[in-house]
Length: 313
Image (tube, rainbow, N blue to C red; front, side, top):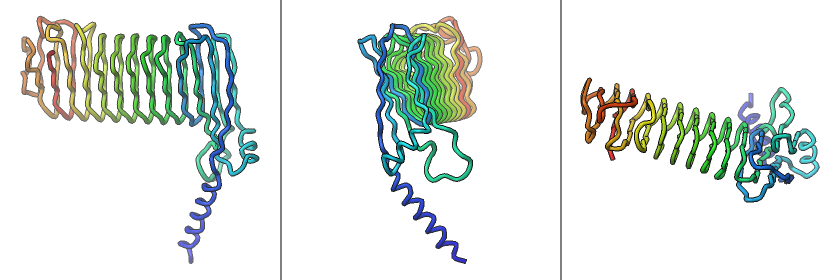
């Protein structure tokens, strides 16, 4: 039997098929008059979503269709099965791209055969709801709310004044500044935040969490990395930072008053420089609990695989 020859032939056919299917790009653009405070809703399969800010009261939507086809005629056939909808709604603007369901069976290449990226320009005072099944989401500095979901890409946010709810199943999340409540999550990447003013909730199953400055309550948890946070000013409420596989590091104001409860199964707790009345354990041990500067809201720190460090500035 000549199975190796058959496999080689099949492989060469696959390569020639993929080579023949070059990417053909088509662009669709629409613009709408917009009122401040409206909502942009975008949903696409496999494409990126990027929101840019403009000083004009206009929403401009650009849809870039990237088609895997060997000719313009084949591209037309593929686009005939794509539903592209860009329209003004009662509360703002919506844009969506959806390809017909995949026919059961074997197909060369990835599905769907067309990827639609959306680049949208909105007024600075606007809200966005963005969804993609396989691309990145990027939002500039926005005076509004952000809801963002992607199954396979990164999320990058600028300075956002409204509430933020962002999540990805397979990428990193970055936020420059959040001025209201922040909720960010990923199943397979890192979370990095520059500044968070409102209550903040961060979670990842497979990466690090790094928040430079938080001014309100903080809950940060990871199953596979380090957690690092800087708490600016006094604690506004109870905070909890935890990891199952890394190190926890927190920087607090020297005069901040709070109750500290730190415990690790795989390292030691270091809290040198704090004025603390120890109730259980001690610095250099696996547990340290006590009142810092007379006590206050609870700062709870947990690690199963590394050290816990609390530093005063």
